[in-house]
Amino acid sequence: MFTRLKCEIEAIEEDSIIYEANSDRPDLFSAEGVSRALKPWLRLSWRGYRVEDSEIKGYARNIPDRPYVALAVVRDLVLTDEAVSQIMQLQEKITQTYGRGRRKISIGVYDLDYIKPPIFYDLADPDTTLMHPLNESKQMNLREILEKTEKGLMYGYIIKEMPKYPVLRDSSGKILSLVPIINSDDFKVTPFTRNALIDATGTSLDDVINAVTIMATSIVERSSSGLIEKIKVYYEDGSIAEAPRIDSPEITVTLRNVNNLLGTNLELKHLIEFLNYFYYEVVKASDDMLIVKPPIYRIDVRTWVDVVEDVAIAYGYDVLGSEALSLPPTNTPGKMHPIEYFSRKLRDLLVGLGFQEVANYMMSSRSTQQELLGTRQEMFLVENPRSERFEGLRIWLTPQLIEVVKENTGKHAKIMVFEIGDVVLPDPKEETKARIERRLGIAISHEKATITDGLAYVKTLLREFNVDPSFERTTIPGFLPERTAVIKGCNDELGFVGEIDPRILYKLEIKDPVVVAELYLNKIISLCMH
Image (tube, rainbow, N blue to C red; front, top):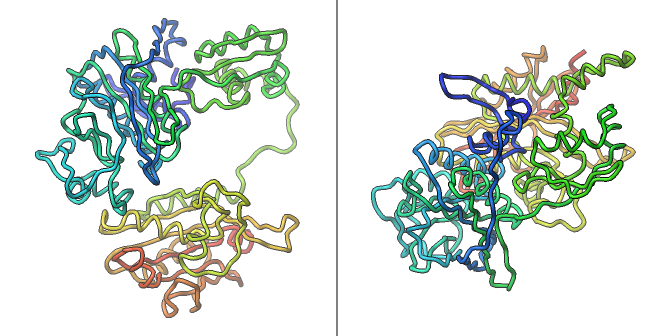
C-alpha cells in the first residue's frame, strides 16, 4: 500500500514501520498524514474535518527579510506522548525540507490555553527581551539563546545580524517563539494539550500558508471534533492573510490527454474512481473532461500532469507495465547517461571518504558568483529577477560551497562537503551561445587544512577512474597564488584546486582555512574514459 503513496518501506521493526516519503509530499511526513492517505486503499471511511472562522486575530509588523506569518488553531485534541512526538517530527521535517533548514520557513505549535490572544509577529530587543527556551532550565535574553542553546548555535546565523530579532508574542507580552530559532517552554504541547495554535513564518506568503495548512490538516486527525479555526493576520500595509488554505485551484483534465500520456483507454468513470483514492473533489464532469480540485494539503498538485500521475498510481504501474509488453520492441533500449553514471559513482566515493553532499540552486546572484572572489567571468542574468539571490545562472560551484562553509563554521570542527551540479557558461561558439557543464566541487575546512588535503582527495578520486593527474601552479581570483593549481590529465585541464585567500575568509567570518577543488566532469568523460 505504501507504494501507492510514493513511499518506500525501509524497515519493519516490531510494531514500527520506517518509510521514506518523497519530498514533494510533506503531508505524508507523519503518522496522521499516512493514516489519512491509506484509508481509501483499505476501504476505511475518513471523517474529514471542517474549517471555521476564528475569533482570534493576528497582527504582523513589517519585518525585513522574513516578512510573512500565518496562523491557525486546531481544537479538541486527544493526544498521547506518541502523538506529540509525531507533531514535533512533522514540524521539523517540513522546516528542514520544504523550509530549507528554517531559512525559508519555520513552524511553531503551542498550547493555546496558556496564550492570551491576539497574537503579534513583532521585533524585540535581543538584550532586554527574556523568554524561557524549550527544554532549557531557565530564562535567557534572546542574544543568549543564540549563543548558549543547541538550536541557537545551529540556526542563529539566520537572524544574528538583525538589530532586533523577530518574535511571536501574545497580548500580555509573553514570547511564544524566537523566530526561527526556538519556541518557548511555557507554551509547549503536551499530552494534556486540548487546543493548539500553529504558526509559520518565512520569506513567502504562499509558503507559510501552505505550511500551516499541512500542519493543521495533519494535527486535526487527532481532534475529537475535527475542527480547524482559520485565523486572519493583519499586516501593516493593510493586507490580510488567512490560514489554513480553504480552497484549491481548479484543474481541467481531458480523457484524451490522460490516455495519450499513459497509453490507456480509460473512461471518465475510471478517472473519477481513481481520483477518489486521493480525495479529489470533482467540480464538473462531461463526456471527455473533468474539472477537479485536489485536497488543500496537496501542494504538489499544480497541473493536469500531476493529476494524471495520481491516476497512473491508482491504475497501477504494474498494470501499465504489463500492457506495455504488447507494444512492439524498441530498437533503442534506455540506459543511464554516462554523465549520470559518473556522477553517481563519484557520490558513492565521496560519501565513503567522509564527505557530505549539499545541493545549491543553479540560480545565484552576481555578488556570490562574481564579486565574492573577484572573477570577471560573465554570466547569464535574468532581466527582471524577483530576488537578488537569483539574478542569473551560476558559472562555478566554488562560491556557493564557500557559503555552505560559512553557514556551518563554528558548528563543526571539520567541514567536508561536496556538490555535483551543472553550471552555465557563455560560449559564442555554441548555437545557443551557452555551454552547460557538469562539475564536481569539494570544500574542506578545519584548523590545519591546506592544499595538500585537496590534492590528496583529487588524486584519490581520479585514480579510481584510471586517470593519473598532475598539477601546475596557477592564479585564480580569490585563491592564494602560491597555493593554487590547475589539475591536468589526458592532455588537458580537468579542473583546479587551491586555498581560499584568508582576506576573503576574514570578511566572511570563517576562522579556519578553506580548500576548494572543482572538476570538469564532461571533459573527464570525453577525454579520459573510453
